[in-house]
Amino acid sequence: MNSSFCQIASAIVGLSTAIAIFETIRSWLRLRHIPGPPLAGFSRLWLVWNSLKGRLAYATEEASGKYGSLVRVGPNEIISSDPDVWRKILGVRTEYRRSDWFESIRWNPDGETLGTTLDNQAHKKLRSQLAPGYSGKESNDHEKTMDRTINKFVNFLGEKYLSTENAFRQVDISEKLQYFSVEVISNLAFGKPFGNLDRDEDSLAYIHTTTKHLPLIGVAGFLPWLIRIVRSPIIKGIISRGSDAMGLGEVVVWSENAISERLAAEKRPVKDILDSFISHGLTKAQLEGEMVGVM
Image (cartoon, rainbow, N blue to C red; front, side, top):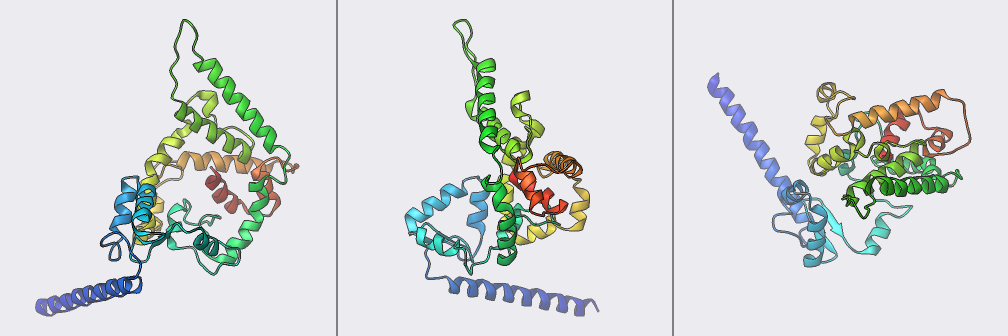
């Protein structure tokens, strides 16, 4: 019996290996006419390695400079620096479909957002609902909000970091500009500040945790099996929504509370992105998914 089991197991392993080799060769042959980094046609290792190092953008730029406007960077992955190619791919009536890579930026396994919707028709419908909010055409408050936030940022720098004849105050302006950016986005999206400038800190460690996890998100996009594991009910049960295990837990809670408050309040003229999304019929689940994406 043990001998039979070993024979069956060996046959399964052998068959699986043969299929994997066949699929690898078939994939390589299909795009073999497109140049690219060595072994990129056989494995996503080049993509994963550069994502982990946080230099994928630089690596793809270097590859385009070396191999031309069309470069093979994976078994089924091609990049292009040709504007005409991009216009064709991103056109309104495009027949191209978003790849499974976009699954990696879906923070909520149960919900779709504009950035993660793969079906072209569903994406088109959702885009029509969201476009007025993102463009700011329905609200006269966007420019006023920007002006208020800019003035607040200028006053913040002047009050806390303006040097005098007797005191030199050092400031990491790149850090403060990130605080300012998040403050602008939260004001435009939710009509209230995230709190970075008020507390002069990375509120809820949002910037730190998202920056920390971005390379991992990039890697997950090239490893579909890893995404399926993370999306599984078992893993979902382990990672609580309020934790910062994925770098978004506290932000999700903050966003959901703001949405619940707005839905419970009386209707009002459109003043921010959230108002616009509500007026165009997004459900509570859709709002929760999309508004975290806005941040």
